Length: 271
Image 1 (cartoon, one colour):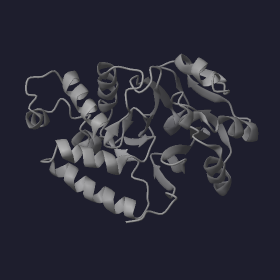
Image 2: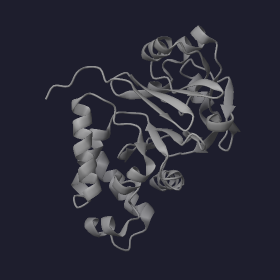
Image 3: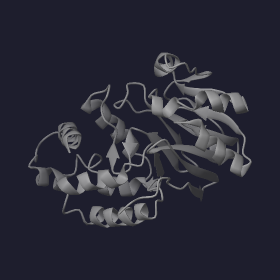
Image 4: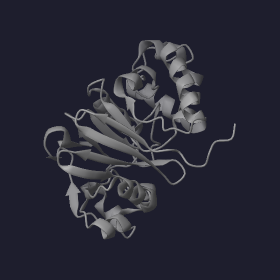
C-alpha cells in the first residue's frame, strides 16, 4: 500500500496542556506545548513545519527546548530563534556538540532542573544511552513526557554513544513514572518497531492488538504518538526486558535484566 507523503499533525488536550505533534523531515517529530506559562517548542528537526504549525494557531513560542545534539533534532534552531527571539535551552553536557553544528544554547540544563508552574511545570531527566547527554522533559501535572530518541513508541534509540546498561537504567527511570503518562517520542518508527516486537514476543496479546491498531493508524497516515506509558510497559520489548515471560520466550531465564535488554537491542540492530 502506498502511503501519502506527509504525516498529519495531531493535537492532544489533557491536564491543562495542549500539545501538537508536528511531523518534520522524513520521520521526525517536533512538539508544540501550550500551557499556563505560554508555548514551548520541543526539538527542532527543521524550521518550516514548526513555523507553519505555530503560525496556523497564532502561537508565539516563549522557549525552544532541545533533547540532544543530533542534527535531526537541532536543524531548525536558528530560523525559529531568529523569527521569535525565543531562548534555546538544552543539555549542558551536549552544549559543545550543538555549538559545533553552528547552533548555540542560551540556557544550559542539568538533570534535575525544574521550571514552570501548574500543568506547565517541567522537570529535566537524564536519559543517556542514545547519546551521553540526552535529556527528557517531564510535565508531572500535565502528564506528558517528551523522550525523543530514548524511549520510543514500541522501541528505544540506538546506542550511538552509551552502553546497554546505561540505556536500561534510563528506560527503568522512565518506566517508574505514572502509567497514564503520555509519551511523546521523536520519530515515527512505530510500525517497524511493532514488527520487531512481534518477532521476539509473539505471544503478547496486548502487543498483537496494538500492532493491528498501528497498521490502521498508519494507513490513515496519522501519527502513532503519543502513547500511554502503561501501554508501553505492556508491549514495548525494551521495557519488558525484566519480564519473566519474555525471558522464557527468549531462552534467557535467570539472566540479569540489563543483559536481556542488551540482547534485545542487539537483535533489533540486526533486524
